[in-house]
Amino acid sequence: MLLIATDEAGYGPKLGPFVVAATAWRLDDHAWKAAQDAFGPYREPILIDSSRVLIDDSKAVFQPASRTSSNLLQADRRRPPYHVLQWVTSAGWRCVHPERSYLELTKELASLDHQSLSCRPWLQTLTDQTLEIEDSDTIVRHWRHAGAQLIGIRTRVIDAGRFNALCDAGLNKSDILGDLTLRLTRDFLESDLCTDDEPVEVFCDRHGGRRYYAGPLQAAFDGTLVQVVEESKRESHYRVPFADREFGIRFTVKGDSFTPVAFSSMVAKFLREKSMESFNRYFREQHVGLESLRPTAGYPVDADRFLDDIDETVRRLGIIPHELIRCR
Image 1 (cartoon, rainbow, N blue to C red):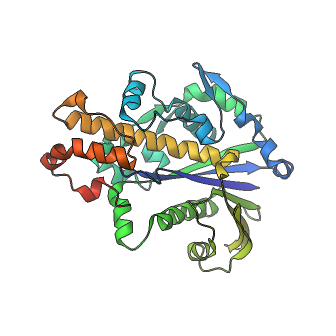
Image 2 (cartoon, rainbow, N blue to C red):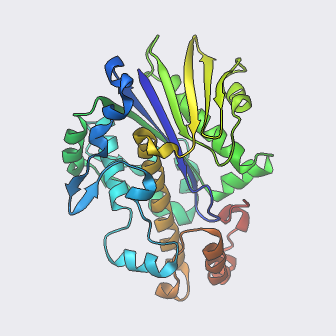
Image 3 (tube, helix red, strand yellow):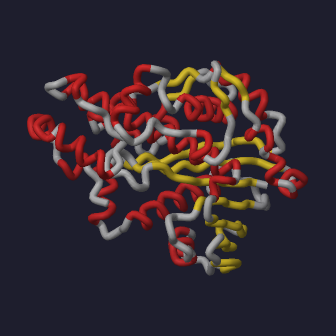
């Protein structure tokens, strides 16, 4: 069977891109009967360069340099705080493309958004980034013992300008998350990865406090009649007819406790962290005070502090605030 898992990063911040990631996995029928066990090797820690690399609840695996600037600065002097996320993303790409020795980060992981991202000078370092992935082979070999095999990774990386344009068109933040999630899901369903008559199940972390998804599902999948299986405080579960098949999709509270959703979350968080690294580097280089500019993780209170610090720089460079600052 085909299992698709999705999650996001950057839903709350005021600065930096909003990222949604989807991963596709193949399980045999036996593995599906004990799906958690099928992902066991992904949850087992592997020691790489003194780092414990594993897939788990993203909050347990990744503790970002606190949202305070001082901790971000300290992290810059050591290895990057996202190093485990990078190992996971690199190994994931190597699993999907074993013949490849490198990953062109946004050009390949976020191909639909690469062009628009490259137009933002503060994201230039991100769009120019290429990762060497051969070093992740130890992780890949360990994961091959799992009953579930990773076969696809796709992401959307939406910068502030495009995010604001979607809001201007009448969407709210929840609508944008839902639309990106279901578009990525549909992309996998329409790809060569999805074989005829293969059962498909989709797992998503719940979108904020939203409980009801039948309307967005019907709109995303050609107006088909969506069957509601469950809409509870814990989980919203549906059966959706599409392209001569029917697939199941769930939106679950704390969905990233399920390993494939956690994997998608870690990929999304890695792209978000790399985006903010590029963002901070650009404004540090442009800022008159150079190293005196404290970096930001983009969350509202510190984002306001950062915007005050770079106000003169933004005006000098002629940057349009609507292209830099998310409206919600």
